[in-house]
Amino acid sequence: MKELQYLNKYFIKYKYHFLAGIFITIIAQIFFSYTPKLISASFKIIENYPQNGLQKSEVLKLLIKNISLAIGTSLIAGFLTFLMRQTLIVMSRHVEFDLKNEVFRHYEQLDQGFYKRNRTGDLMNRITEDVAKVRMYVGPAVMYTINTLIRFGVVIIYMYNVSPRLTLYTLLPLPLLSYVIFKLSVEINKRSTLFQQFLSKVSSYSQEVFSGVRVIKAYALENKNQEEMAALAEESKAKSLQLAGVQSLFGPLMITLIGISNLAVIYFGGMMYINGDPHIQSIGVIAEFILYVNMLTWPVASIGWVSSLVQEAAASQKRINEFLKTQPEIQNKATEITPIQGRIEFKNVSYTYEDTQIEALKNVSFTVEKGQTLAILGKTGAGKSSILTLLTRLHDIEQGAILIDAQPIDQVNLVSLRDAIGIVPQDAFLFSDTISNNIKFGKENASQEEVESAAKLAVVHDNIIQFNQQYETILGERGITLSGGQKQRVSIARAIIKDPKILLLDDCLSAVDTETEEKILGHLNRISADKTTIIVSHRVSSAKNADQIIILEEGRIIQQGSHNQLVNQDGYYKELYEKQLSEKEVQ
Image 1 (cartoon, one colour):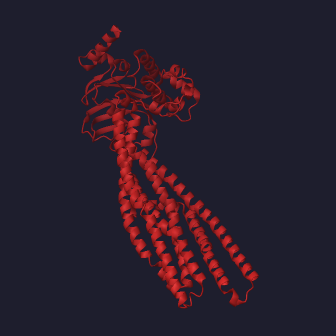
Image 2: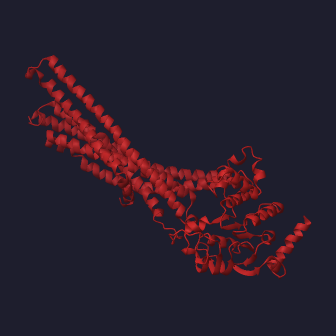
Image 3: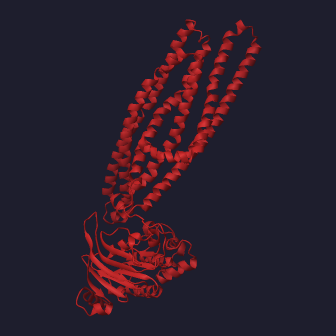
């Protein structure tokens, strides 16, 4: 199957595990297949001992010898089978590890637009359920396929050497078996694909419900969501039962065909023995063939299971391949890592969001020299955050140019660019980890003193030390343990500890009071003397100390200048300043 060809590179990578598994399997099957010969020889001894002039004691010794050999060969074969599993199954675990890492790395490289088009639950399902099914193909499916092929080869050679004619009668049901497997495999592939797609839908719905559980409870929608989940679960159960219904046909069909083969051996072998066929000189030969057929029972039965695993893996790998072949829209064109100084220039930049067709920026131009602070103000939807999004290259511009240190932004090494930027997003995201590790996210090897220093600059240290575990307090999902203002300040500390060349603050003080805001801004003014800082805000208080201020409206710059210049001009900034000044006086 072409979908599974993608995994060939892993078979090459772990070729020594693979080849060792094949070699061990061959040796194991030779030992397994030797037991029927010993039993056939024992039957022949018992059947003919009076004619051979053997004493009962001699017959007993020969039987004990054959039994001992049979036990010995079985033990050796069992040990080799254990080694076979240790090589091939362990190989599959290595492949699973590598594939999950490959999927995860690709997730990290994909652009923001990809995550807008795909649901989190579906992406999680692909890296867990789909990879697990692929692992079952690389491990058990491959192992039992090799085992079956080698056992068939060894057993058929043994059978043919005893009686070619009886071998033919024994194998007559196999073409029918192949046809049944083919038909069922096609149907399993279809139903497995549908089931996996629907499983992603269930995972996505569950993830959204868990993430938004506070909103659901606030609106008392538990019963409604429970009913929707029950409906999804019912449909998922129906698709699972449809798949299981087809898979369950394999076992009975395999056993039936093996039973037919046994009957063929007894009937045709018995007739050949009665008619004096030279190849069937003993009842032991018939017993030997019955044992050979029974040795093929599990391999033949496993064909159906293996076929099912292969079909499910093909369906899962197809889903994985769909996004592994997806190339990120944001490409790192520059391979050379160069230091970033921090000069930023926008030249007639325009940008329209592809998914909504909203024109966020229209012919925007400004320059921020290294070490300067720019404040961007405007109403909601004016395009303020879009400027920061373009600076971090989460999206690429359509018209105009963005220059970093006089170099086009798409010609700057992407790793260098993002490593030089410290950003505090509008929606503060914290990980389900300790507060200390969340702050260290900006600088992994930071000391505890550096963590506390950054927290003090972000005016959140006093809040942290009030917790029982202080900096080792484990936060809930998305930082749910903290208040909105505390989350914003921890995010600011995370950016400060990185000591970036470019500091981007996206309305990150909206949830703090004006007194705390003044303290944070004072600290930021001191530490950002050699940093290029861009502050997006709705408050004049956040912008008044900036070297320059721009006012956006519907994606255009309508005012530009310093605080003193804009206060003396009629327009949005003056109105906002006077409004906030009067509100402060009232308070």
